[in-house]
Amino acid sequence: MIYPQSSITLISLERYRKIRNMLHHRQPDLTVVMDNVNKAHNLSAIIRSCDGIGISEIHAVSYRKSIYTEQNAAAGASKWVSMNLYPDIETVYNKLSASGMQILVATNSEECLDFRNVDYTIPTALVVGAEWDGISIEAIKGADHAIMVPMLGMGESLNVSVATAVILFEAQRQRAQKGMYSKPQLKPENIERMLFEFCYPRLSRELREKGAPYPPLDAQGGL
Image (cartoon, rainbow, N blue to C red; front, top):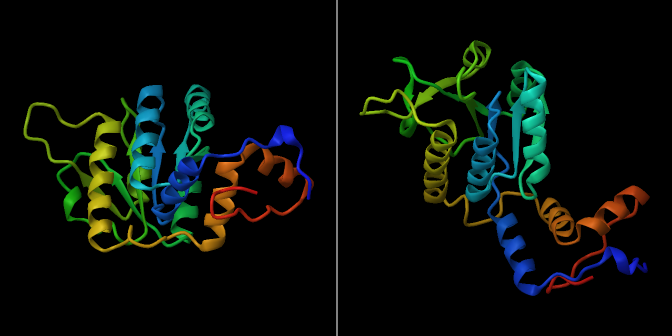
């Protein structure tokens, strides 16, 4: 097939290898649910933490149009992490439960487990709450466990993006100890598909619109 020259900007070998390495460390059975988190800096920080530990898909619940707008903007600005938007927590919980994930809500009460005493090597969804309102009652009731980051000072809790990062890096530590970053967790066909889409985003869009298959990439990321 001859591709339009305007669709192709050849990727450098260094960037191709970096993208491939990133995909080889992705953890498809680990995700985050943002329950009405709406501040732009927190959304961006959470997405960056997710990317940093190998999460490629996250979820967000919005009950107000203003929150949806902020979340939608964050989703569009994220190249490496996709975000699915939902109108209510029940919808996303049904989806996660159907895929076999344990659902953990990060909150702050006497009944909560210390976040370090949880097994993150099994399929896991971490739910974090809005900056002012915290986790919704519906989110707590539908979860398998409630967890907390213990606080020894006067503050009752961490900023939502900081708490998310702390918990996620504990998940990364446990998974690394178990060797879950030592071999790809994504299916080979998904790695190849995502690799092509990240390397050649414009061409991949054009091929999808035409219903045409992606061509194989050579060892240096070329067509």
